[in-house]
Image 1 (cartoon, rainbow, N blue to C red):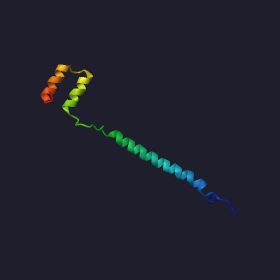
Image 2: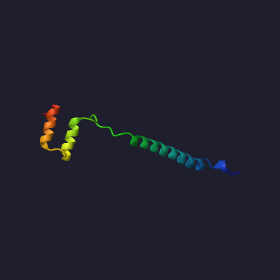
Image 3: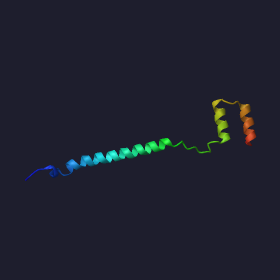
Image 4: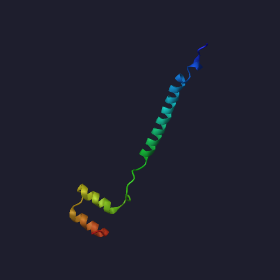
Amino acid sequence: MMWGYYDMGWGLWLPWLLLILLGIGLLIYVVIRSATRSRPPESSGSAADPRRILQERYARGEIDTDEFTERMRMLGDG
């Protein structure tokens, strides 16, 4: 009986198949990862919500309590 290249069966094909599938998976991962990084982060409210901006500025100490309450009052939440 002659033993040749094709007599090895899956012993030679399986590692190459796994390597190709791994490469395809890695390519898909890189594409999805780069696509999600290029999008701006989504926020729950609108980007220009003045109340949220005021609360953030107040929390950071950029404005004092009087200015915060006055501006919130002007927005109708006071």
